[in-house]
Image (cartoon, rainbow, N blue to C red; front, top):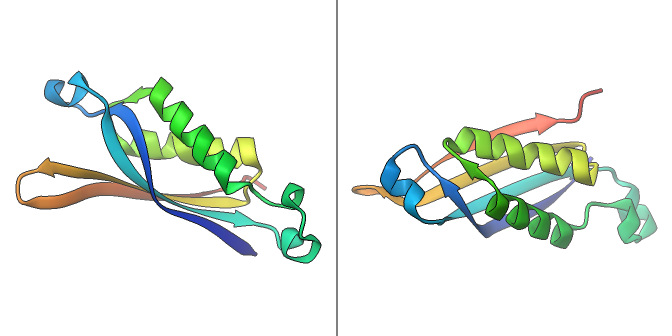
Length: 117
């Protein structure tokens, strides 16, 4: 199985459990690993893979239109989107919030999900 990855993708959304977090959009950093079949490596055809540009656009659009309390729910939302809308075999989603706690560079969550057999 092959993997496509996106690193350091920025996306804005309303996220957080504290009132002050929900006053304006926050920029999150996402890393995605997307499992794909080997077919594209053999065919050289974009139709045989997951188009990472389309994934990036869809994730950013979806997060702008949604709001979340927890990073865990946001990560689940992104994973479901990639699996259902793009036909990925599996996905790993890592999300980072920057500067949210004093003296902590970043906090975040990472999940892995796979397509049900």
